[in-house]
Length: 223
Image (cartoon, rainbow, N blue to C red; front, side, top):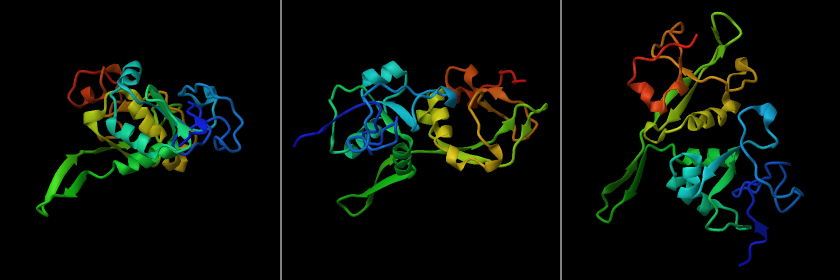
């Protein structure tokens, strides 16, 4: 079997959408292959389709300073388009946000069960998710005014190692943001130890690991 399409970083290997022109790679897309780098600020983005950059090898994970997600790798190679030829030495991949959401939806189940030979139920794996409410404040108001609305974002704290993971989870849900928030950009991610709206806000990025915040009590509030 031959593969007519070469793997490229500016096309999603799952659905083949071009990250530059939004057309399907191999059909109406006439773009040249190039390396696309994810950028936080929308004004700096030189691509049209939202995507996430993920490692496929330990070398790629080391370069990105993230943990290698073996489940994602298995899913990528199980769902990659049959028209794409990808070398086993490829260290990273850009997956469009829509396909990435499909992968996340498959991981939402808390328990994965399978029947054993004795007709009993065998527990294969367990993933514990914790839901963190995301709220938005108007930074131009003093004191900062909390905008109406909130959404719950699930996190597996055992696998939460970088702030990029938090930003990625937030950005993947922008289509679910309350309309009162309008168009926002992530500049500062804070958290509160108190559920009181007027409680102090703390900069999440001032620790080495996001989960360190769960036990620390010595940090200073953000003005």
